[in-house]
Amino acid sequence: MPVLTRRNFLKASAASACGLGFGMTGNLVGTALSAADPVVLKTAKIQAQLADTGPTRDVLTYGEAGMPPVLRLTKGKPFAARLVNGLDEPTTVHWHGVRVPNKMDGVPFMTQPYVYTGDRFDYAFAPPDAGTFWYHPHCNTLTQMGHGMTGVIVVENPNDPQFDAEVVLNLRDWRLGGDGQFIAQFRPRDAAKSGTFGTVRTTNWQDEPRYDAPAGGLVRLRMAITDVTRVYSFQMEGAEAMVIAIDGNPLPQLFPLDVLQLGPGQRLELAVRMPDSEGAIVSLKDIKGTSPKVLATLRATGKSLKRDIRDLEPLEPNPVERVDLTSAQRIALSLSATAENAAVESICGSLGYAFWAINKRPWSGDTPDPTEPLAELKLGMSYIIDMENLTPRIHPLHLHGMSFTVLSSSTGPVRQLVSDTYLIQPNEKVQLGLVADNLGDWLFHCHIIEHQKSGMTCYLRVV
Ligand code: C2O
Ligand code: CU
Image (cartoon, rainbow, N blue to C red; front, top):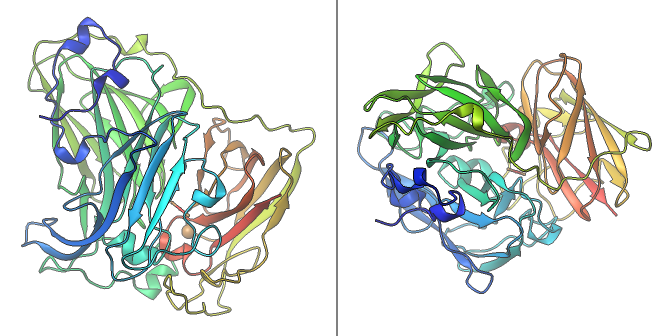
């Protein structure tokens, strides 16, 4: 059975001798990478079993069959991927949260030409940060992502502490009718509110999958919300769990998971202390909304390893530059609703509506001639984005190419987390600090894709 290269995340120890078969399927198995040997990401239209009806047609993915592969990279090591477009429409790949050079960012027109049917594009970069990230197209995204093209990236750090098992969860929904086939990806009246929700919920393209993990062991659970709409409230039942990283960045101080709300595009890493008794079940739940959903379960196997979760230290921080608060310039950014300016037609898809705006301006879509940047930043200088949400909805705002630090919020004390995506609450005002350390044009948009595609997008220029 092919297994994860445990060596990379488990240092040799007595504990690592057990439990190789902890329920990883072929899909979750990493790919050995070297710069000379690009991973081929061929896009394809397939059939897949997603609901308990028959197979769903017109599912889009990377690879031959099933869920897009989990890509395993190593911090600081060169990575290469060749996108080969097998779809009958253009596409690109964006490496969400990975700080890549601008030309590798995958935004059509802004950073690269879109890739036509039958064409290819070579991506190459060395990820500076270790953590959980993900990849998806940045062209006709509501359809392409909605139909399946969302995959998880694990960037390993050889210095990480040892875990007894690792489980990667790709969390997302599908808009399927009763016959298991795709229905309209959105409803305009919902796009103007919280977005249109899926009808079938999955984890790794399955309903409530179960994974085996060593009893009494420490499991590293990596989750990515790759859904186009849904905000999750995570809760764990049956085991103690510590939050070790959010959005690909280690927490300077671990804290126990109680309930944690995260939005589309965000990632959560937990250390889970498995129960001691063989057969005991741990459930990961989403408790947002009226009907809680079990996302996945872990089952304890074997004799207890008797690990102590309090032995766990914070992971090594990523090399993100500290904001200089004394010299930082401020950038005002307000999120609002709008009824102006219907979007223009675009080869990368348009919903045909403008419902949202940034600084009163609705983004007109992916065009060869976008509006000017929200702000021009000087390389190496510090900035504070003063973002306020004038709408009654939650928005996960995602910045490409750079990481920011959450400095303060009108909602109360904040953990000063480093991130690429901030889930802003209705009427919240938040201060995000960043050092402009990556040259180029960087998109900043809501990751509820209907919001992104109906106006809530802008970009920062670093010169
Ligand atoms: Cu997940 Cu523009 O990004
Ligand atoms: Cu939004």
